[in-house]
Image 1 (tube, rainbow, N blue to C red):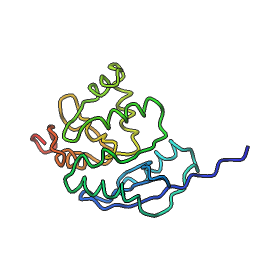
Image 2 (spheres, one colour; image 1 turned 45 degrees about the vertical axis):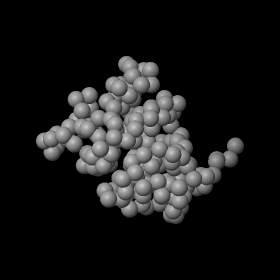
Image 3 (tube, rainbow, N blue to C red; image 1 turned 120 degrees about the horizontal axis):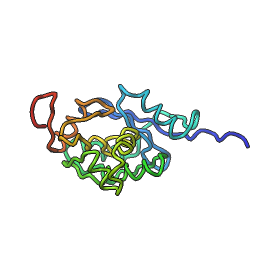
Image 4 (tube, rainbow, N blue to C red; image 1 turned 120 degrees about the vertical axis):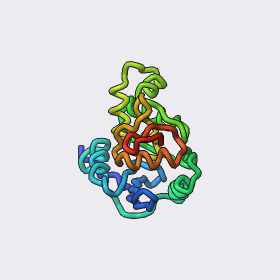
Length: 184
């Protein structure tokens, strides 16, 4: 059987107040991955893990108007604007369950890893939920930044804790920003 040709995805670079966002989308307008331009190599690693080595070919271009308009609205203050952005991922069934649960966290709210595990009916899977959260290929749209520590402090974020704090403050979420010595 001959190898499958790579899937062609569009790579867009979208300006935001916290840096250029990379948006990978397919020809049907589904977002396949997002990341920050200063973390582009991580995005390529996630794409290789999800689609295999050589499984994706990125072509420079613009994401759909729907995606760009929703991102623009989000960063302009309509923090629920990303709720309807279409996403298609190739993660494991467990990862997709976690990512669906992330999308259910409303803007302005946060959850701990334990609360997220509880919400999917797997209260003892806190570590697995954390790993799935970290493997999320579509950050911001699938809002992994809304997961914080059980003590309400910021925990790791692939785009950096400064961006995570900015996103949570932008959404009006309550958290403890230990790096700033105050509530977020």
